Image (cartoon, rainbow, N blue to C red; front, side, top):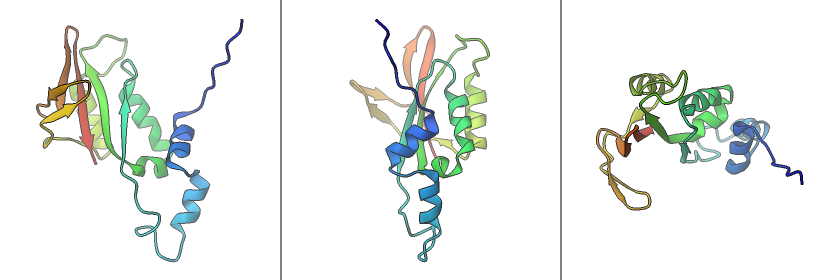
Length: 138
């Protein structure tokens, strides 16, 4: 039997999750109270784990500035190169900085299936291959 799997672009999915389309967002930004007051800025935390393509997905969101400005925190998987053309940690940190995000230097622990220490904005996921979850904030 054939199985149909729905597909949707990440920007369309995020717009649906955030409850507005870009046209609706533009309409809301043009209200008489000003863009800074309405709609209230949502504090969206986005977790991306895309087998080495994480930063590429975040960079693709730049095509939708309204969605990008809603994302205030990000969690990305960063590892020793496993996949072809996968960026190394220093590249990910640099590119996240270019997108306006910095590591969560203040974060000391995360609870995700247990308590995990966070050092310099990242937590160890596996030692071999060396893989970390890194946390960023705008």
